[in-house]
Structure formats: C-alpha cells, structure tokens
Image (tube, rainbow, N blue to C red; front, top):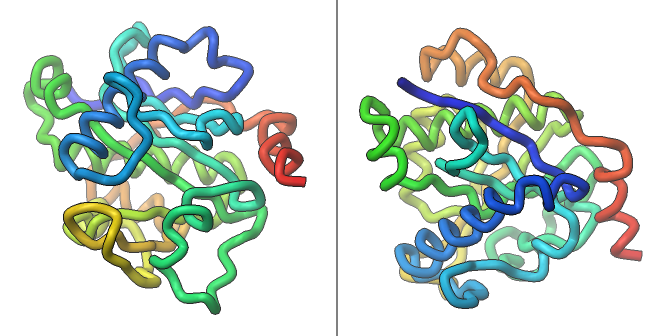
Length: 225
C-alpha cells in the first residue's frame, strides 16, 4: 500500500489537528536537528521556530484517520517573513528577487522513515519523499502558486530529479550544518505535474482537498507591514 491522505491544514484548523502539528514538530527535530545537524530552534523533543507563529499552511501526509503522520511540509508566501531571506540569504545571489504573490516557500519538508517502514511495508523512503513532493506540486497548483522556493542539501537533487521535478539551483552556502545548503527554484505547472506523475507512475491525483481561504493567504502578508 502506498500513500494514504494528504491534508492541507491552515491556521483556523490548528486546534483540530494539533496532534498532527505536534507530531510534525517532533519529526522535524529528529530530521533537521538530530540527523542533519542544522542550527534550528529546539525545545525538548520538538523543533519549532518563529515562522510557525505566522499562520503558515502545512501539508501533512497521514493515515486515513488523520491520527498518524508520515510526512510534512510548511508553506509560506514570500510576501511575508521567510527563512529564505531571514536565515538562508547567503544561499542565493543578491540579484535574485524571489518575492512575489505567486512565489511561495516550502520548508521543513521531511518524512518519518520509521513510521513508513512500520505501516507502509512496500514503500521505500525515497519514493515516499517523491510522492510528498508530487502532492506539494498539486497543492501549489490548486492555489495559484507558480513557483516554490526551497533550501536543501546537495544530495536531495537526485530525489528531485527522480520525482520529475523541474528546478534550478541558484546557489549554495556553508555554515548551516554538516553539508552545504542549496537554494532551489521549482516550477509549478500542469506540465510539471504530468511529468512527475509519469516519472512516479501515478495516474490519479494524490491531493484532493480544498484550496487556501482568501483570509489565510492574505494574513502573513499583512503581518509584515
């Protein structure tokens, strides 16, 4: 059995899905602090920073009952505060302007390999990550996003290519963890989604939920004023 449910959670739903948020923060700590040794904000068993207070949206991959988390991504518009500009500014050239309503930042993308190995026996971790990437592309398309920006370590390039994603690496910098951190610009389009579906041999949409509400999209931008 492969993917179960991909769920987009916005600020007005945080209380309802608090258990998934908590699992996501714990997963982020294991991946980004413990495994990758990134300089991230850790409190106890969780990794959580100030951007989680700015009403981002989260894409969760979970079981059908929405009780168990298998992966997550945080989404924020570049018209508000972002890790890209506040933390990872050295990873892309000064000439690049990456702030626009159609450009969003995808951060803290990770999967729970232990949970996947336990519950989804036929699913390899690399394919699991690629499926989450495809679901992210579908969510972005549904919400009028034409470009996603992400910071990642160099070894992730092979997974992005395996998933059929279209991206350009703008630059990279040292000093964030054990390995350099890169800045990539990912195209979001129907062509790219079809290419990813073909690469992953997926014939039906992974994400079938609702789009962002107007209020949720505008809130982060208003908070920067």
